[in-house]
Image (cartoon, rainbow, N blue to C red; front, top):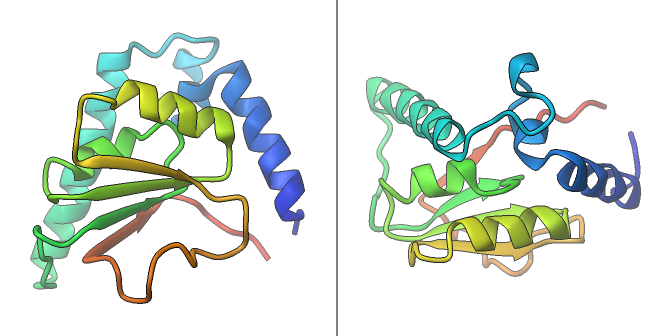
Length: 140
């Protein structure tokens, strides 16, 4: 498994080259072909699908509690979660992704972003979140 520093270097490269495509790798959208509207709508659809499944399973979700988007990239899913939760935190390892997320969502007071360059989330106390979403797949 790559080191944390290697992961950050890789994601910084993706963020600087084509940040939206790095998050949603639709082959037809490579080379800055995502429109911001289509990109945001894809996040809204993804979160609607996930929350629908959560409701189907009968799992309780507190919309007044904060949500966490782990590996948020430019905040596509953070903003979608903000439509369902009063407070949302997007966390990412890439400074460029976080800056882009902050810029994209600067008018949404429910969206907060944090650059995490460590292997833990100590910034947040245990059991801080009502809902946690991550689209990151880790390989061992």
